[in-house]
Length: 151
Image 1 (cartoon, rainbow, N blue to C red):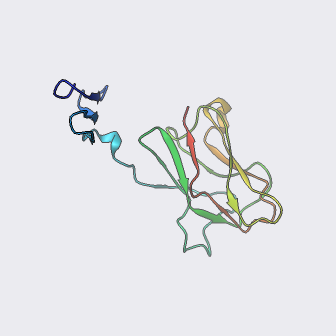
Image 2: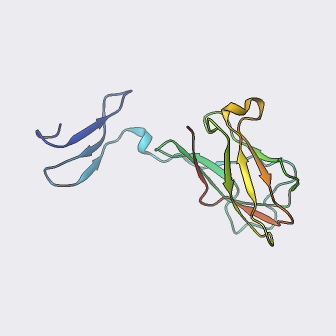
Image 3: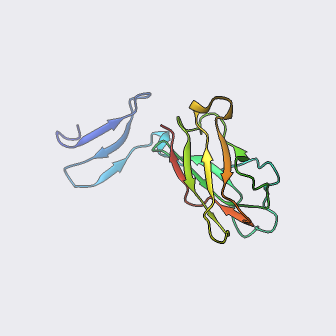
């Protein structure tokens, strides 16, 4: 409670305020609890011929966990093995969804849209794999704006 009014959300770990809705002045105030700080981007380790040659104007494929528990991807990769089910990169523990995610991505493919599947914890030994499908003759595949939930 803030001055008898409002709502305070506290960290379950430290007890410190992390977000305050204050009825007194109508403003939302943020505390200094560290999960509100954005994590830096982690560059993906590409495999199966996928690389960033010739796409230097774009970010390399990378991932980061957001404060709301989602994972965000970004970047562009090119010229890898395009066979359905090819692993482009693998996300480490802590960035893997509970169940598999099927995500439309951008690409320069005539007549079809490339898709990636992010394999979840329920996929056992394949957990964390980011596999390409429907790549066709794509010269590039983009991840900008891709977000998925961990649950």
